[in-house]
Image (cartoon, rainbow, N blue to C red; front, side, top):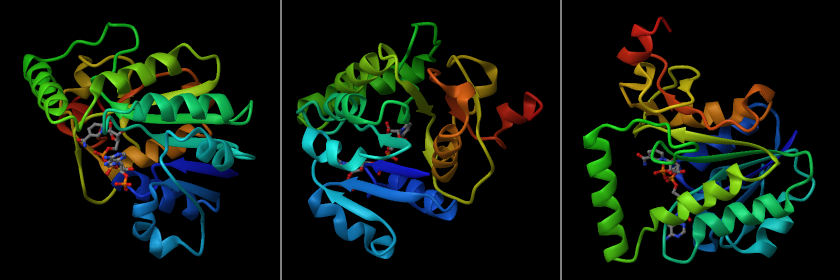
Length: 226
Ligand SMILES: NC(=O)c1ccc[n+]([C@@H]2O[C@H](COP(=O)([O-])OP(=O)(O)OC[C@H]3O[C@@H](n4cnc5c(N)ncnc54)[C@H](OP(=O)(O)O)[C@@H]3O)[C@@H](O)[C@H]2O)c1
């Protein structure tokens, strides 16, 4: 299996790189030029394609020949970073490649997610502040996911809960909709977010699904019998 990891230098990306290598996968990582040193520890085991992840030529080169593409979608900057990245992956990945994208619970596929007032308030504040300082563009992450949802590719959009660091607790539980009691605890280890994405590469039951995930050992997952 040859996989491309788009956003390889970030926190989630580095977990993805390590877990892919542990499985014996051949890894191509894409990250901004200035972040290449963050991958120093694995630089001799992966191919690094430096450049902005929304640069179509960078993505075209990186995804060539890959069976899977794992993309960390982030709403940074005000230059269509997420939608540009997603579009390039959709356009240039191999026809049968598994495409797995990361985002947060705030993305909704069918409008049937039910959010707490606390969640909605926090998102509104993050959106306003982010736009004010021109650092974050949540609407562009939404646009990226709209394009993915409309695509007939073999995609999965993994929607992360709040995240924390720490040892793996196992494969997260998931639901099609936020508001499902199993997700109530809203906390996943970042390493397990990566685990879910890596597992999705070989799990065809997740093709064209947008699972919202939550830690396997959280109270709400346990209450559901996990
Ligand atoms: N943080 C949370 O609580 C949370 C909750 C739910 C879901 N998620 C999702 O989890 C995924 C990973 O998020 P994370 O918060 O854990 O962060 P992360 O893994 O550290 O990823 C941040 C990524 O953004 C890149 N980046 C940072 N500043 C940038 C800029 N100005 N322009 C372009 N790229 C920039 C980083 O690249 P460099 O290495 O080059 O800086 C890195 O690839 C995302 O899809 C996010 O939506 C996060």
